[in-house]
Image 1 (cartoon, rainbow, N blue to C red):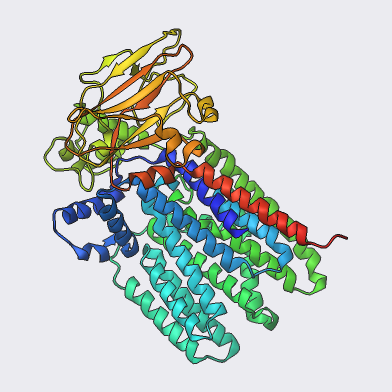
Image 2 (image 1 turned 30 degrees about the vertical axis):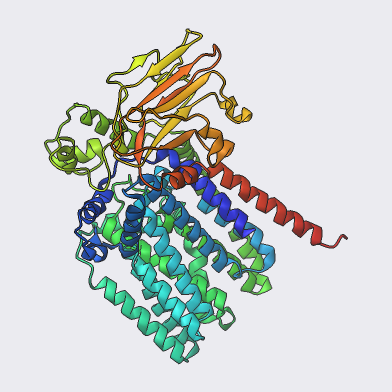
Length: 607
């Protein structure tokens, strides 16, 4: 069952997030790209791995981004996004595995459904496509693992070692990561104080984790802090998530957690491993909310917790919900009815909060109606600048507002410096306009189709015209990378015929050797075949050779459109195949669930 759920979470993440991946690096990406550029020039600066990015330690991210760069031969936002999707799924796996035994088996159904909803629904909107945010998920996953090992395996040396290792890994992922180590220390001391007994395992675990926390926290540079009112407001809304729209009501979300902590202190019957773990994770969330409010405020996000931190805030209702169940199960029978009434009221408020988020944030994001995502705008503007357009460059603020990136971009466009870590055609593609001939035109596809908005498409479709034959021959272009990618638009019904596109042709011609590479057969001959999310294809090329695109349609009912070709690195087959497999992963996840649930039903004795 867990495998099926994780495949569903990963598939939905890829399917919903991939259309919003923009190849133009954002500000947070550029810092790393300058380092990667120096690396490609032979300057192997290992000190950057340990440097702080906006006060955040990013050692694990920097090491993995360097690995991606070396394997791919260039930075790729899609590869960064795919790694983020895998980390998000790993985070979900840690939550499921550590929460699995906290409640009796009869309660696991709603628990698993709740976890699935939190991780599958893109509450943070278009930010799920930002690869550089995955350290939030990684830090939280390693922190939860550290707390689990310290509470459940803390009296054996292997558990101590794993807890310390996970705490150290958590600390390498953003500034809040070291709070996991501090919470292991605090929860260990807290449990020892309640029991009036401390073991050698507790002393070693607490000492090592305290050292990890101090080692990271004391070396962080000072940063600008939010004002008291703004910070307090951000902290309370984080702790009240998803009930952030009604003042004070959001505090109801945390009532079960506070009640469980008090029960652990005053009632010995609540001093169990599952309660220890739940109170420790609740304490971690409170510390993260406090730190986020104090150092980031509302992050210019209209008084709401920033979508950057939703991987952290979404744990609040889950922790409180499990705490509510533990209180209900552990309290005397005469108190269960009041707790049951409160549970229904708590659940109703959570449903209201989630509904507001889903209808006013998630659905507009999925349908591209929210107006917040400006990745396509940035990328289109950058392409226009490369082709000669000019924009206001009078201030750094103007650069960020118009392009979402650093002022150095204008030096890159002007040819004063190279594009760090990648090539410009990886962002803009090759323009097919110069020297092109034929009947295809820009945006030549039916209005009902909604392709990637940052790309330029050439197609044969014209409203009101039904010519029997059209052709296109582009000008030449010279790639410097080993692959080209092209996004193809065809009639959606062609998937049902295994992309048997009669009368339609799309070919890549090597002008240097005369070799002709037919591209449309790749739709059915390359992974994930007919199960692909969209029709993006790739073709190997020889760097330095000149190429052109040729296309034709000879059917009155057929039409064909394709994007301008983009350069891509050595891992392109993996990137394209994986990023096109969202629906296929969902199908595999559902198949796992059906098989497991069916076998479980068959094993139950008939009444």
